[in-house]
Image: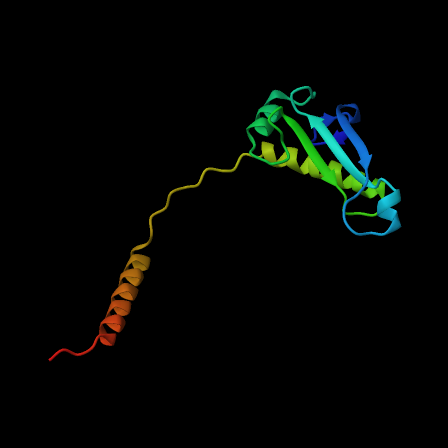
Length: 137
């Protein structure tokens, strides 16, 4: 079971993981051993609560396909087990990030002193620039 929050878990039967060969340099280990993990998770067919599903489907992330399938490829580590943990951790982070609702921003007014400072700075800059002009007689 992949623990998402206190009350939400995903059974491993809903997560499809395949071992594939890693890309890039690495010598014989890369050519012989399938250490990279290709994780697929179907959002629509999962047992996640509807709120989680909607949040994930509305998320604009390149790892989520048009069909609502999360595809994660982990190949940073040399061992298959570490890559499996990495892929599951990324899936967990993606789901928790999708559900968090940001607090609305409170609109504030600039203080009177900050407005005065800004205008003083503008006039000072204008005076400096006007001093650069050639003197016309």
